[in-house]
Length: 259
Image 1 (cartoon, rainbow, N blue to C red):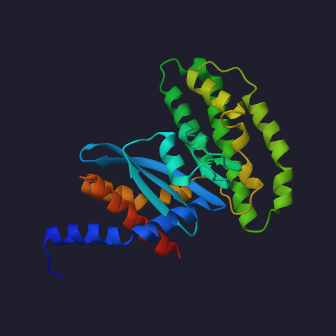
Image 2: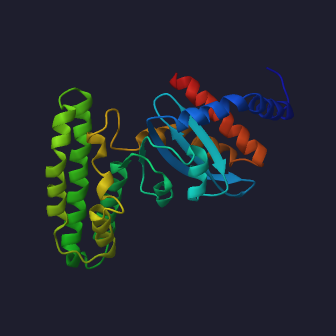
């Protein structure tokens, strides 16, 4: 199809403008959803730092580009009354949500624990931190086992009732793992996060009680994969209108694919 770059740019902005009512309808559907996966990744807006936010599930994709990474953005996307279930990483901005159920991404915890163990092993006198290395390795193994329960549940080998009954024993097992002498700041911080009710403790095993909820945020990360590739190729957006057009079209195309 023969055209000039200016025509393509105009088509993108025009398509986004005509699609605005659909985009707003997607926002309302997202706000009414029973389960959402949330994430954000870096973006460039006229050369300056910005953020591409995502909210979605198996039926819907919603993208939004903003110069801010504050909690106000996620509040503007989901509103003040969202009461469904949320799966996300432990970024503090998501704590503004009054979600009824919260699940933190266990894959992030596994990766973090493995990275901490690998980092400590590079220390010249790493033998002084042998208990820290062992703790981080066991934490990674423990949450890998927890994630495996989700696969059993989805295959019908683990009932929801049985999965729910396993939570107290999993908490005891985690407490026993954390009941050790640690000296490295990063393992101490990880241990505190896992045991603190204000941070992660209440969001580790929620997926075992909620049908359809995953223990990881892989859904959101996969949804962001194509936009991330687009960012690497294009270096982001040059204007607010271009950024909005990208978010609108990505939301509609992503939802269309899911449906």
